[in-house]
Structure formats: structure tokens, C-alpha cells
Image 1 (cartoon, helix red, strand yellow):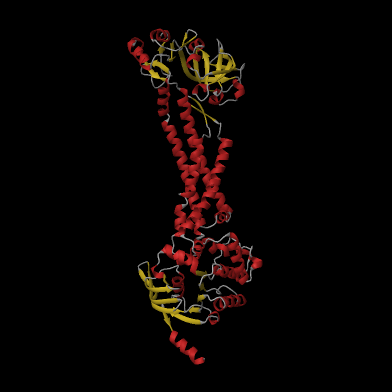
Image 2 (cartoon, chains in turn orange, green; image 1 turned 135 degrees about the horizontal axis):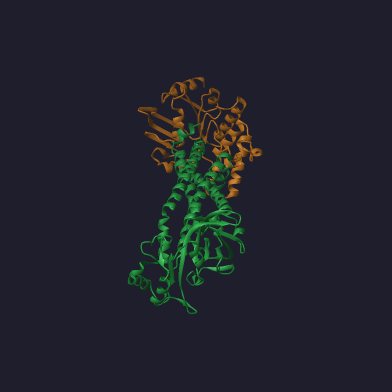
Length: 235
Length: 382
């Protein structure tokens, strides 16, 4: 059974007097533990798809099942609650809270649960250790490099142990070296920790780190078959 | 919920904006404190000045103003003998015929200002029971006794109204023989003359009023007396009712105080709201990030309100400190006396409620606006 199962998913909204449909009748299955890259030109609907999978947006039509739950049918409050325990979101520009230290930023998702202070400290330390930033725990985002900030953001995304990680251009604002470190980290999370990762990227090199790459254009998946057959031939 | 420290630390994110919010709320609270203290001070002095046991007899048609009133000199003794049940002490009836006059008084240093003058005999103390001699003695001919706040009414230094100092009324030189207190009443702003002196100096052969203190008698007895002695053309009014009427007379001034406070507050309020709109608008993306982590809009709203409450309550505290240093105990002269501004529990309560409302209700529009965009839309904002 797929970890993410999408059937006939459509998202449309009105912009002024115009109706916009960034995703149309899209179907997709992502197995548990897969690292999936979504590529496509700007406006192809990849971030919209990512937001729908992450539960921060709701589809207009269709079925969107994540880990056995149809999140398309959840109310806003239920989605908020669901996100708190099931999803870790990694942003291109990290989106760390500037007034909090790295430790406190990572601790944010845990404050929604019922863990004791010492339990939280233990989990935050473990997450920071995984991203190799224990020595920067008490630094504020302004005192960290871009790569370090993104690692803190990844630690924040994984600290509450969600099964699903979504990443929107996680290396888009980093130099090659830092980007490679982040991609290696994401690969480790998928391969060693069993996280299912959906990553939007423009960078073919970043996509190479993923198990599978899908291309979107004008709200529809393309080349999936072609790519798979190409992969099969090469094997 | 987000930890309280998040709200606390956000306060110091932009010190300029913090100063604007704290300053704006301090100004609004300060103005409201001042307006409430002013109204309360005036109400309290007017309500304390009249006693329900005193009845004032005035000339018919002058019930609104004792200054215009003219009462025949004999009315005092006729009332004393004609009304049964008037209070008396040691055989002296508590009936005081008085002359009330507003005229300029000149101090020894040459400062001339409008003063409230009352010509009395010693038995006035039987009807004005709040009056206590603090220093000196009751004035005889060529002497006056001053209320302890009379110097504020004349806007002169208290030393000018010390016992032994001279004041001038027209060409007459008068010595200050005593200083009296009448806590919380308008009497404290008056200058009391020997009644015969004031009659001579003002060339009056009538009294302004007769005040009498009821013993077993009731107001109706005095009222019936004024009707029976139609020839004297008198009208009776309970002293507390008289000051109640005066309070209505000063209503426009109170309204003006509120309108002024409201207008300046509105300016400060809009300035404060604008600051909050700008402060929250710069955090739309951060709010969206926290929502994507799993924080509900309500939790974020609570945090934003906490943050504003901290700022506005700091402003409120600042307003209290300034009010304590600059307003509390200050005396404010008005046409018929002087009242004291006091930080009473009502005044403090009003300030506190204002601070809380500013921080809670005032924060809602900018906070809701900050949280209203959808998460994807807010994440794209700069």
C-alpha cells in the first residue's frame, strides 16, 4: 500500500475574475520511505502539489490519502492537528524564527505535544546531533550560515519524528557544498530513518539525490512512463 | 500554545515600534486617567460641599446662583424664630446669614485675582460643620480667614496667605487672621470676612443667603416657612440639591473634557494601531511558518495579543507613574472653588481596563489581518 495515494486531484482557485487551475486530475502513488523529487517549470503546480500533500492547502476535488488518512476531507482544525504530528516542512528560505535560538526553533513542534522539558531537551539534542549542529544550539539564526540555518530547519522538521517530510527547494538558496550536505542529509533520512520525502526542486543535481523524479507541466504529470522505461532500459 | 517567552522576546524585536506602542498607550491611558480624575474630583467636591441636613434660603428667582441672590437682613432672625426644629448648640441656633461675593483680591506682593468671598459671623461654623480652623482665629473686623486652597484659586504662593499676611479688597487692607480647612468642599477655596466688613465694603444691605441646619425639622418645614412669608420673597433648597444642580451646570465642561480626551486618544490610538499593523504585517510569513508546523491560528492570535498586552500594560504602568508624579494631589481651581485630582481606585481601574482593552481588542484587527491569508499565500509574502 502506498504511503501517499493521490487520485484525480484538482486544485483551482479564482484570481480576480479568472479561474486558475494549477493542478488538474492528477494521480500519483508514493511508497513509504521513498525520496521523491518534483521538477517542472515555474507555475507547473509543483509547489501547489507539495502544499496539498503537506496539508497546508486543500484540494478542490479528488482524493489525497497520506498514511491511510484522506486528508482532503479534514477540516482546517483537523489539518492543523494532523500537520503537527505527521509532517515536517523544509522551506527554501529556512523560515526560522529570528528571535529564537537554534535549540528553541527546533523545539517549536515539540511544544505542541505533552512532553516534559527534559524529554524535549533530549529530542532537540538528538535532532541537532543528526544535523551536526550541537555546538550551534544556542546561536540565533542571524549568527548561522545559510547551510547551518537549513540544517536547523531540517532538525525542526524531523524533531517530532514525522513520517512525511516535504521540502520546497531546500537547496535553492545554498552554495553547492552546503546543498550537497543538505541532500546527503535528506538521503540519510529517507534511507536510514525511513522517512518519506517529497522535494520540489529546479536543480537537476538535487533531483539526482532522490529515488525518483517526476516532472510536472501545466498541472499535469508528464514523462513518468517515459522516465521509468528509460530507467528500466539503463538497468 | 506558544511559550510566553516568544511574546516577550518579540517585544524587543523592534525597539522603535515598542517605544511607539508603549508611548501611545501611555498617552491614551494618561488622558483617560486625567479625564476621569477631573470629573471625579469636580463631582466629589460638589457632592461633599452640600449637606442633606442643611437648607439654603435664597431670594426667590435666584435658586441657581447665590451670587445674584438677595435676602433681607431680617430673614435670618425671622427664620430662626419662625421655623421649629432647627439645630442648636449651647443655645445658639444653627442659622447663618451670609454674604457671598466674587471680586478681585490683591495680595501683599501685588497679585490681583478673582476670589470667592463669604461674609460670615462665627455661628457660620454651626452650619458649615466641615470647617476646621487650622491656624489663627476666626476673623474680626479688619481681618479675614482663608481656606487652605484659596491661594490656588488666586494662583498665588501659599506663603502669601499665611497668618499675619495682608490682602487688599479695593482700598481696604485686611489681615489674615486664620487659615481653615473644609476637606473636599468648595469652602476651602474661599476667603471668609467678618460679615459686617464685607457688607460695608460691598455696600450691601442685604444677605446673599441664609443657611440653616435642620434638627428635628424637615425640609418641608422650611419650604412652608418661605411660602408663608411670601412678603420676604424667599425660596428654600436643600444644600446638597443646590450643589447637585451646580454639577449639572458644569456638565458641558465635563463633556468637553471627555471630548478632548477622546480626540487626542483617537489620534494616539490610530497611531498605535498603525504601528501594530506594520509590526504584524512584517511577520505574516513567520505566522504561516508556525501554522505549517502545527500551531493553530487561535494559538498565534493569543500570542500576538499577549505581546501587545505586554506593551500596552507597560504603557499603562508608565501612565500611572506619570499620573502619580504629576497629577495625584494636584488642585484644580474652577469658578466656585478648587478640587483635588486623586488617583482613586476608580481612576486606576479605568486606566487598567483601558490598557487591557487597547492590548486585547485594539490588537485584534491587525492580528486578524496578519493571520487571515492562507498559509501558501502567506509563505510567499516577503
